Image (cartoon, rainbow over all chains, first blue to last red; front, side, top):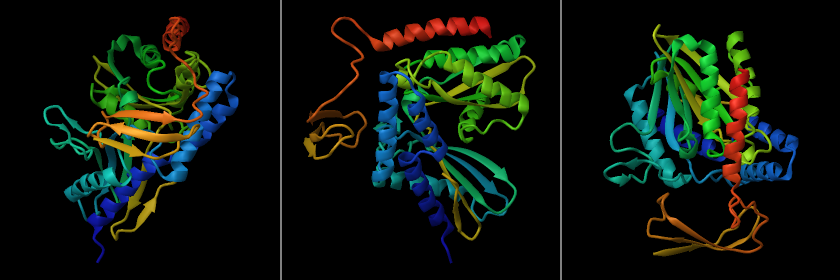
Length: 292
Length: 71
């Protein structure tokens, strides 16, 4: 009999390793194309360093950045999947195990007791879980470690609803401009619109999981995403903020319904190292790794 | 406690990577490098008051105003 909890733990630890050491293929391709298309030696040298870094990390199976992020998991639990709360327990164990094994930098700091040294918070919130209940008998896990530098430039604003879509665009431009050279560009920008003050940020983060250049299925939103990519690149932030090369690789948006009196907009920014990795486990414990 | 690791970096051979501080497993530790064939590097802040980050921030602010007018 297969120990499903053990399968989850091993799979999640491996996902953390993949995420930390290997970029999704479309991100890698985009960064290589970015180097090719960058005019100016300053920008080109930065893009070259980024691509060398990505290559070395993958070759040596070592983290591509010293900041291996704050760990979060997006999980979808199927109705017939045999485990429930034990999924969380297994993911916490995986995080603890992965920390010395990969290694991940210990990034969970308790405000009163200091660094926990294992990436697991003392108060039950880290790693953070985004849990969804779905039909079927599978468990889907996506590991997303997010660096502190680019999280520091995330922003939320309750835009006056009268400003409408223009207000949303303005805020995305303002948030990206404020990030400027500070958070290791070229960026991928996640935008969440609607819901409440917390939900828009959740949606913004979730939108970063969509592969680059896969635009929203709603054509209106897809158009808006493409328009924002062009607009934000006019900021001329450039590779590593030096004004040359790509500023923004892509923009992804998710929309929720909003309260009539509110228009919450969340902007979550990823550095060039847009890291995530996923797998699906069926009820027998077979693991299918998502294309990476 | 001082730990000495031998390793190599991307562009230059790092002879000894000395991590000072007891907290080797802490993100807040200090790193001292001994490096061979250092560079070429991009100097972002120089002794003449030049600051590429500040220049970049100013340029981005200017571009932002223009973009917001055209939205």
